[in-house]
Amino acid sequence: DQQVKQNSPSLSVQEGRISILNCDYTNSMFDYFLWYKKYPAEGPTFLISISSIKDKNEDGRFTVFLNKSAKHLSLHIVPSQPGDSAVYFCAAKNFGNEKLTFGTGTRLTIIP
Amino acid sequence: DAGVIQSPRHEVTEMGQEVTLRCKPISGHNSLFWYRQTMMRGLELLIYFNNNVPIDDSGMPEDRFSAKMPNASFSTLKIQPSEPRDSAVYFCASSSGASSWTFGSGTRLTVV
Image (tube, rainbow over all chains, first blue to last red; front, side, top):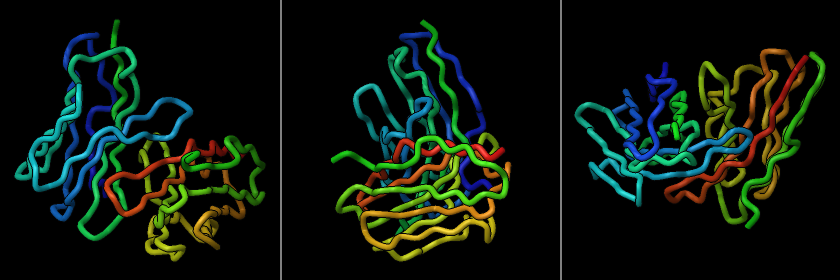
């Protein structure tokens, strides 16, 4: 069973516009959520995270929103830049457990 | 720190052969994770260790897969015998129990 779901395999956005990547989860015990970015032939790199006690976390152009009642989180990138083109993975962990559960990823393409 | 180091970067082997993937975690990190990336399932956790002890191996596909962590600075993932369906990118990650996990660059395994 896929506890973390990214239903959009791909997304194309014009440079300068906002990119919104979505993630849904089913496990109500998840208490910490992360977004990773992955370029081809490289490992995933940490982008931004949010604790379940918050509903928003911002870091420069990147903002993550968490809606616990809907079991939904989203990553906003504004403005989008060509270097943002990559695969983005959503991940989550249970309280007291270091295991990260990942979604299947969304390939973001920024169109110049 | 050099980050999480995986070897080899690429491995091509014939069906039925034994394959060993290696990982050196970041010094001071006490948890190590082995993930496999496939198109269908994204990043799936195979096994994770805490303080060199296997904590959760529920993701190991079958008995052909085994993992060891003989000390805090080294881990192996072994597949014996290998099959074409094992072809994937295998990632190792480590964490210090804080808020982010660091991934290696991965090993691309091709079984022909």
